[in-house]
Figure 1 (cartoon, rainbow, N blue to C red):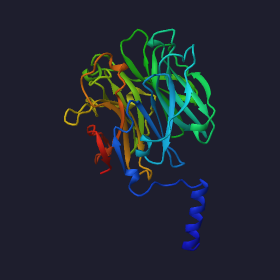
Figure 2 (cartoon, helix red, strand yellow):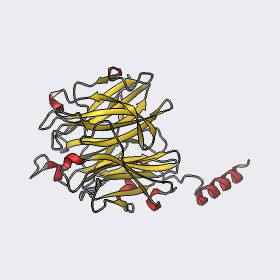
Figure 3 (cartoon, rainbow, N blue to C red):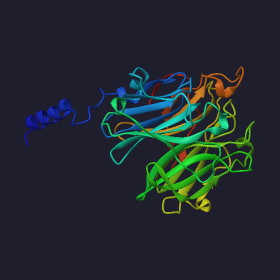
Figure 4 (tube, rainbow, N blue to C red):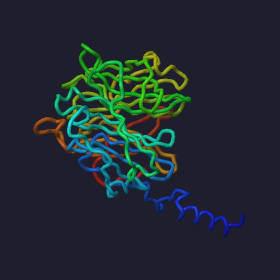
Length: 344
């Protein structure tokens, strides 16, 4: 095919939407932090259509929002679409936290934490909605409700990933009669159903996981360099909030707690020098070419909080490069200061 015909062919595909459009040179490598103000628990999904999709906790805790853009920076000014609102009563009528968007078997799923307005916060459970629409911002969403786990206890912050042909569900849950929240894992028999075997992967055992509250929550998974990395958040949601890391070999049994090694120290924590406090509840994405890993998380630009830290709306979505050490392990560094950011 001649160069002229090739160029014409690509142009037709791009205009028709069959070929993902790329951002202008350099646009996909720069943004401003905070990326999205007043949005905690961010989750970004880079789809094959060339869009980044973002959802996060709305400060009113009453809805699920989506936005999409060709670049990370474009998410800051993208249209915000409310795709689901909590009902007036029932098990999903209370606080709506930490939505995540995933594309599974040609269907979009949003996993989120939902509580009952007639009960206290301990009624929070993992829930899910779905749409087959190509563009989830325009989809009609089906409410599947709660994802059933073995224990009927406080549970939240679910994520899902595939590894070697198996789909896994990882979430946070209180073990009956035991202090603190744990990280749990199970195989999925469908995008809305768990297999019977459920495993506790991690409990808050170190001092930095027990600041104010005993917390392991908000798992996020990255498979790379022959390993499965599971980042999670620990301690109270004030300046103590930080990221821990579990690591398993890619060929290990992921349902066996012995397969996982926990970092004895936080891998990402508050930075006095950069004015960033309580970084956590992260996800991982990449540049559009897939060559550079990006860490997306929330943090506050100040340390002292008036009132309940969980009710404070000032956790904002931020993003920065995730670096890699020579041994193939991730180097999270420290949260960068607010302002313009460009990939190194």
